[in-house]
Image 1 (tube, one colour):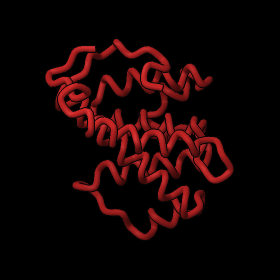
Image 2 (cartoon, rainbow, N blue to C red):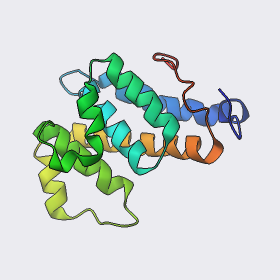
Image 3 (cartoon, rainbow, N blue to C red):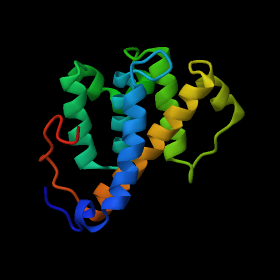
Length: 158
């Protein structure tokens, strides 16, 4: 993988901290108290679309497809609000990721919070917020410092 700045080599402690977030989230995925892996991949894709992160879009589309996600759902993700193919929980997570990713442009209203909260426990809301924070961080590493788009192989960072 090529970078403008190889952040894996130049600041391994920073990447270790970021990986700690990922490990926490993935350990709980698909457990009774956790979030579905498929939902997390949709969130990672949507945030990466908003942030124009080609590396992360490449990675998470490959990961989602490897987990069985359909191409149709990935194609329509950019227009999820108009598409009936997402569950109510997925729609709530996508709304939450859009609001939190665009905080400089929109506010988290009580109505928005209540719509989203109906679909998640307090722990799930916290974990979902952390997952959104993490992918926003990865997007900033990859867009700002560069990453070799197309080079990702499924399971590369497991």
